[in-house]
Length: 128
Image (cartoon, rainbow, N blue to C red; front, side, top):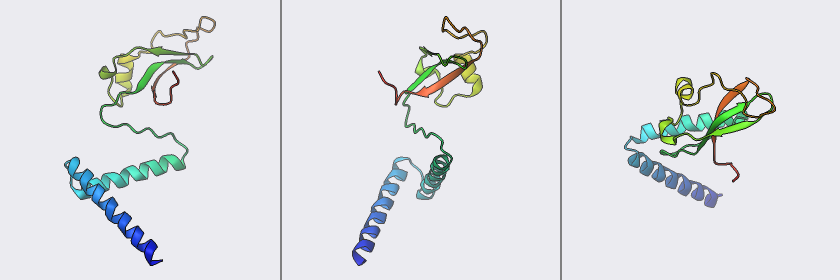
């Protein structure tokens, strides 16, 4: 038992050291870093418990697909959008400016439904 407790203490010590280094790198206090870390932990736990998808985005990574989808036939049309012109987490207004819905119909020649939605999707799981 003593050996397990010693291993646990070493792990805690290493974790605290890494957290201090991360806080220094981010130019925030250890208390601020811990508060942000706890909030992130709470949000991830809540999402997992509720069966929601989790997307982690770091830095200025712009790995998204943009487009329109049809609610009738599930057809999707992908758009070429300058990724730097779209904010990382766009508001509805910013989405409307880049991907307007007015006047858009399904691009499937057999459908042409007006029940269209726009999407912003991670490219991470995309198959080439």
